[in-house]
Amino acid sequence: MKRALSTALVIAAALLLGACGEKPQTNEHGVRLDAPPWTGTGAQPNTGTAFTASGWQPGDRNSWEQHLKARMQFSQNEYTRIN
Image 1 (cartoon, rainbow, N blue to C red):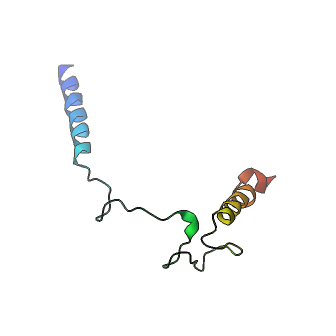
Image 2 (cartoon, one colour):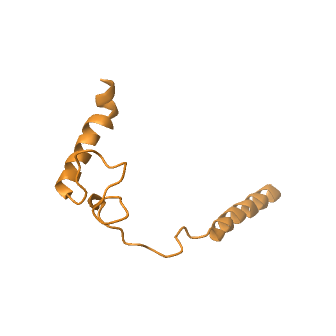
Image 3 (cartoon, rainbow, N blue to C red):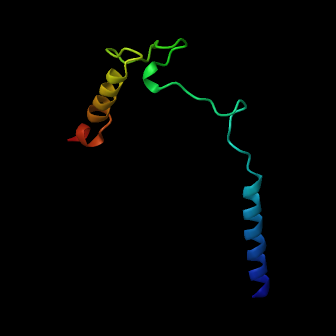
């Protein structure tokens, strides 16, 4: 009985100490402050890419919010798509 308890304690201690060796998940440059999401995804500020939705003008926050609401309501709502 004592042997099983001590074995369990040793295994638990090894698992707890194993978590201490985990490396932090940060990039090499540290935290980067990103631009607001409605400014676009292009290399230059306020420019779009091939993946930019048609009708959306990069840099227009109101337009971005309206497109996001429409996408959530019509194309990414599983209940709406099925029924």
